[in-house]
Figure (cartoon, one colour):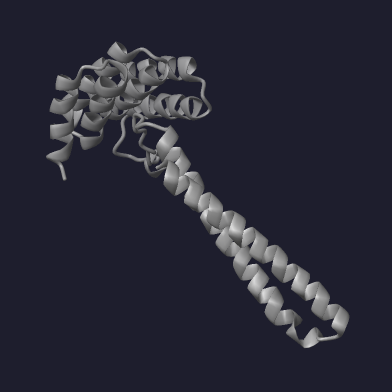
Length: 195
């Protein structure tokens, strides 16, 4: 991996020197009066700038893969699709959804402790969204370093709906945080059985 990073960095440096060389050529040719090649050189310069940006993005991606390890997966919920005015929802379900949405918004802002309170309040009104709520609680507890609570919430979410992402998250918790590789393997296998 180190060699790949060095190669990519070397390419970026070469392209930069090449780019600077073209700019020097543009200046020299302008001073000699060959202005008709300027648009062509500008296009080449712009193309090289785009290539440099693409290489920088690839390098960034490689560095992130190298540095980072797998993390617990957080789904983006489509709660806005559920309309609070939906006639199929009773009063307690609507209240549960309102609290869930508020907790979800707080969690997105990083206010995990307040989000937890809203999620548990939402569960008091209705179990209609319990699977999603327990999933989000599991995610938050892992972010807070409370892995056992996270595991418990993910298991509760499984009681409402079997979901491959829950198995993936449990495998990650057991692999990265609790170092219980036999349990991690069990959950990876369940996750892979969904594919």
